[in-house]
Length: 391
Image 1 (cartoon, rainbow, N blue to C red):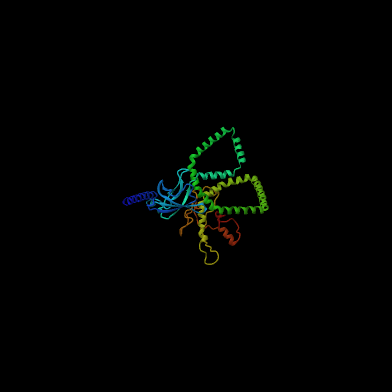
Image 2 (image 1 turned 90 degrees about the vertical axis):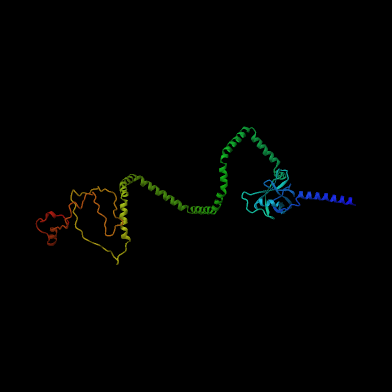
């Protein structure tokens, strides 16, 4: 009896050791965190117990695979709890394999900008990519070949063979030229990549401006319709413009010489006007107070009048007109003359000097006064020196 119990205990111990070894191998005694992956498909060689890797290191396994409507697959992952803090919440998922014919595994791909929050239990991830299998390639190839007519394919291949027959040197030269062109293009790849990178922004700008562009096109269409509707008036306008151009050409051709002479004659005058433009500006600006000043108390015109001593008369030939003034434009106090002040009198060499003889006061023409009072008198006037002077 003791031997029987000892043998039974030995068998139970052996079974327990085997069970524990199998459980340890399968991870039955290891606590895991469940995570779900939804993928477009699982692939042919994807089974439970497949590895889940992060940067090549195993961090879990595939617990089970469920099929979803539309051919999609739901993969239930068991992740090692110690690796949860190493996996960002926005991690990518690829179903891939080391070879085309090898078994698949789940690769967790950290994004360029990983989130601060780690992966949490029960989170659902989207599968980004499933590696293409050889059967998929054959399936797509068969679908393509099923649409190809063998006779037309034979004709196409025959035409290609005929076209390339005897042109090997030219084809080789074309490949060499293509290689040279690509070698020249290679240094510009960075610029090309930059252009491709900024192209979406430019295209978005065009997309934003598309309504305005279409509106402009619509307005252009209306303008074109208006031109078509008013083509008779437009023709009349063009004919009138042509007639005006002919008349203008005739006028200018006949008067070309006189117009040129007028321009040449105006040049000194315009130069002098340009030189004295500051003085002209001062004079015009000095008139502004008269235009903007307050009006009179009653309607009408206010006239301020006064008498001045007579000026010397002009004498020949000393006071002949003379153009010899110098000094350029002089504004002095203009356009803002101070209160109870007046701009100084500028003496210039113009052939007359009011202060040359001195002002002798009021000069009376006594003979003219006598004739005005008593009528014509006989004999010559007694003050002959004052004949002709202002009364």
